[in-house]
Image (cartoon, rainbow, N blue to C red; front, side, top):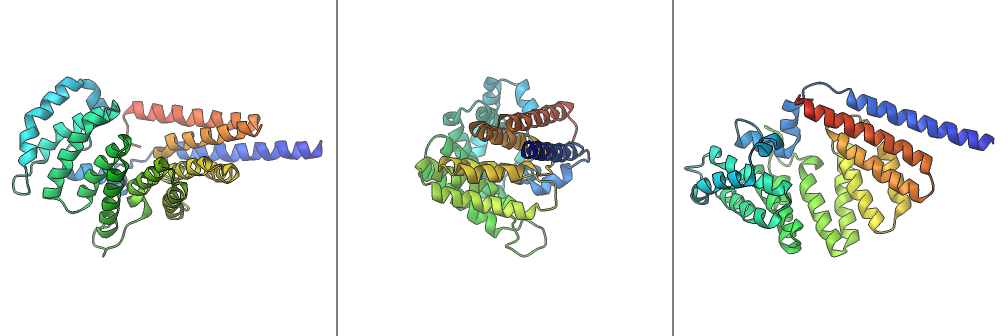
Length: 308
């Protein structure tokens, strides 16, 4: 009975710790827009391209695919012949909106030529992180279409660029952090997973995980939850269940940034799945409840339209 009581107390204590971490994460209310323009590669790209900022999902919902395609087609010829001398970022907006809509629809076959057009244009204009972004967009599409050799070559090219360019103004290269390599490392990990090369995949995911975990130590985690999920999935695919559960349990205690709420919720649900398999249903239910709370709060924040 005493052992049972101690176990119950320990579970309750863990639950309280998780609740406190979640509460701290959701308490974040400061405007991170400026910081994220530096932290997130895609934000850096879009602030470079568009003075009006990134294309948002709300914009896409207002227009159907047919009108988006029509707008893109009207600028297509210009984009195909644009170069450094006549580069006009305004003309990219129609392409980006149409491409994003196709990606949301998971219409990768229709998306592929748009990604190729963007990359061909960027090869004529850029040699920096903007080029890496265009390479990654096409690599993601190639991966989704199962074109693994092409995807791998693109991710490796982008990885090389992101290791050699300056990510911090005024500092000599290399000055990247692991978060700057997130897309390439996870992409290469997924290519290896699809080939059944699990050890190679694990090495890519572990490089990403080890780097961001170290870089985010003492901070509200943004990248660590997703990095943990990627590595845990790879471990589970190799039947390393105990190792994966240990990893997920450690990450469940993270003090996460509000921007990582969805990935932290997915992490907690993944942990709950594994605990249910081992018969720990009560603890699994607690993790699911916290995951549900995280998702609901994130959805409310997103609907509010406020920066956070």
